[in-house]
Image 1 (tube, rainbow, N blue to C red):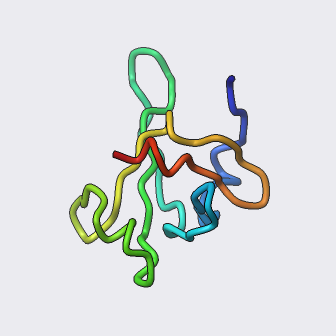
Image 2 (image 1 turned 90 degrees about the horizontal axis):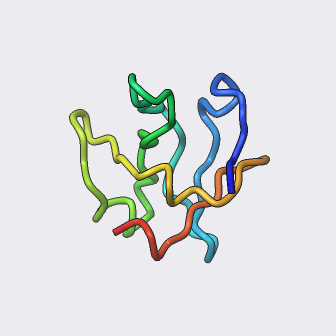
Length: 85
């Protein structure tokens, strides 16, 4: 299933898991230069989220999650906890 959203609208959006844990907020998106497809989402982690604190860290304490784990984007971005690896 393809998930469509305007990139500008994703900045600052809350990211939560399917079980309701807030991972953080969207800071940036990584796009494949050749295909134009979104590959991952850069998050500012929620300091209260143990899952976000265990996730792959980037420079500056940011967290990267694969875009394939995103299930839906509306008022919040919902990600599948099982696919966060």
